[in-house]
Length: 176
Image (cartoon, rainbow, N blue to C red; front, top):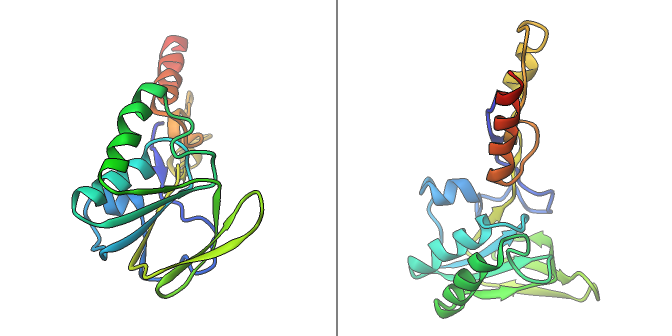
């Protein structure tokens, strides 16, 4: 069973606000966003970077926040060498070592992960949260015990890189 993952919004105070959207909704153009956007990178791969690029391409003012030392820290160097300069050229502000304390009506309260020093990002219209999601294992669990040979692979087990999901499937295929 390879059912993928479900959207997951990080447990941040204010995450339930209408101005907060999940990255998949944004990239599928299911939501409207304002002019000033903060993208929270709850993952260190490409989703947050893609969201920032997508928004900047539409003329939005974007600040990307990551708790890591730099955005996309778990991406390969070749991708980063193309994507980071592209974002900077488009005017995206990349802010590293920064956690999010609270999302308010028109601001995001952030803190430095090393010093705990807080600051407010004012004038925020939309907050985009990019995470790896959470495993969608409901089908697997409902079939367990009813199907003789059943295997969970990929994001159904836990969110991961695509290549890892492919290797999961290939491993099960070889076993069969």
